[in-house]
Length: 262
Image (tube, rainbow, N blue to C red; front, side, top):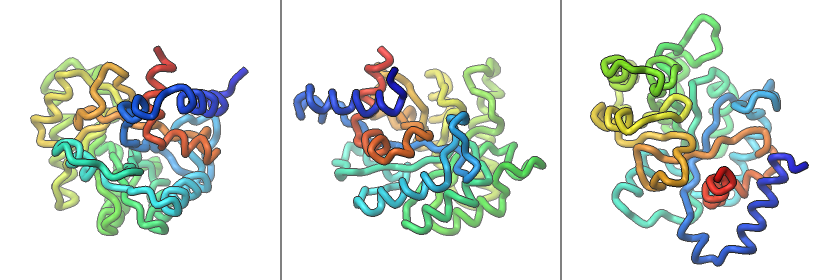
């Protein structure tokens, strides 16, 4: 039986062999990597975690192979303005605001000079469990010039489970206001909790003043160039294998993934 890693490799090779180059190019999607927890204690059972060692190898891979790593806001501007996106362009995001982002991901990003966007859940910042970022850690990363802070709502619940429009507005708009007040800068990036959204939620994000929003897997029928529903690639332990990581960041993995789910 195929493991997920073997399936990725096999499918990717078949696609490259079978499809003409022109067809592949028409399905290219700029890779936006989605991480969550980055820690030496990462386990294979937790699909939202990667090991600190694996993350460091992946960042070194991007640096040594001269990928054009840009901020999410820069990528959104290129897409919105319909400008030509340089080859091997990529963006890095981390969701939820885990404390280990400061302890392990941030040092690796600094080591290789790579920008990233971290989406924080405002009501969980500095919580007593001490498993989320503190305001001091968030500000220190922002001051480095490499880390952009975005909103992941006030609380962690998916917006699609909230029926009150007023509560939706609070989750979306108030989280931006709090972050801007505490950080002293504009907050323009938003991440839908669990990647879920509706057209109404998307409209509220736009109305709140954001310039870009990321989802997870909106699906093959959703436009690849909608800057308020950008598709991302979840990076997990399967990407410990750098060939798999390379396949996922090729720009064609979204095309492969969406057809595998058909």
